[in-house]
Image (tube, rainbow, N blue to C red; front, side):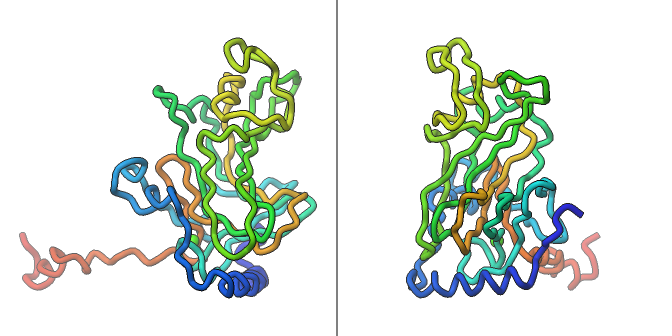
Amino acid sequence: MRFNKVAGIAASTFFSGALVLGLATSAGAAPDLGSLSGSIGGGGGGVGDCSTVEYTTPDKLNGWSTPGDETAATIGAVTDGPLGAGALTFEQSNKGTSLYKNAAGVKLSTLVDAQGKLTDIGYSYLTDGAAPALQLRILGANYDTEGDGFATIVWTPANGDGSKWLTATPGDSDQYWVTRDIRGVEGVRDGEALPRNERTTLKNIIAMNPDATLIEYGVQQTKENAATGVAVDGFVFGCTTTDFELVAPAAVPAQASPLAALTNLFGGLS
Ligand SMILES: [Ca+2]
């Protein structure tokens, strides 16, 4: 099993302790889900029209995993999270701590629709320092290589002070960068190459990597990030919001519906 630190009691204990400090300063303020609430709550137009919530638990990871050369983020208990009693929790590691969802190798260009709109991506996070970074892991990136063209697209939201959950909404930000030097492409950035670490928009990166495929997306507390109490929840990708929980809420029994109650009362409607 690749996710070898699942739901550790130690992690939960550590995290609850960290959150006590947060509660003391946030005074019970409502969770700041910002624009993500439209995705999570459903209805009200926009991306909410296609939203579904997928519970991801230690027993049902739904394609989330961590590569062998990184440390696995773990699902733990939180006391003031934006979505339920659980969240994805991180710790500082010299390998980086992460969890990524399998994207099945779709074309990177599918992240932009015909109208030029980017696929909705975002998440809620807590940190007392640097934020956990969005990472889009791709193959076939446009650089000089004999290999598979692996690269990672990175975007990092604002720092936190540990007092409240924040919302990461990268969208049209011009602060994405790639872990490799990307070759220039006609019609994008005046044909100029994109050096590693140089910031630009995700649209530009997609246009400069026409053959790239998205293999995984997720979040990482990078090895340089020494923040504590780092957590992520409500990860939005397209129409799906991932709610990290220790245990998925029980499904509403069919008998709870009025029709089912009538069916029981009369011994069946047929
Ligand atoms: Ca949750």
